[in-house]
Length: 107
Image (cartoon, rainbow, N blue to C red; front, side, top):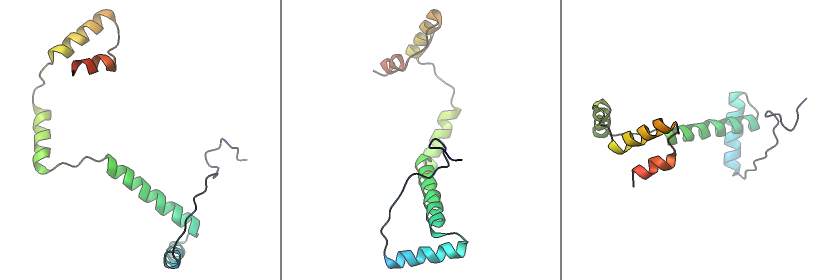
């Protein structure tokens, strides 16, 4: 039995207004894919939504920028004196380094 807390319960509604041509096209594609129209539209929308979200999270670099990034990663690290001191003090007091303390370093 489905309860209101059950994540499989479909309680949300999405209404669309379409042209006759769009409706016919979607119906034809749903039939060809062996799905009902609702399942076809939901699956297509979810697939596109996931693709857009993934695309938004991808960082694209030119060949030159990619080379610069690799070179920066491969360079030996150089200690930042203020950060070294902050971590030294935090270690002595057994306190954690807060985001505010880190933000103070860049000011």
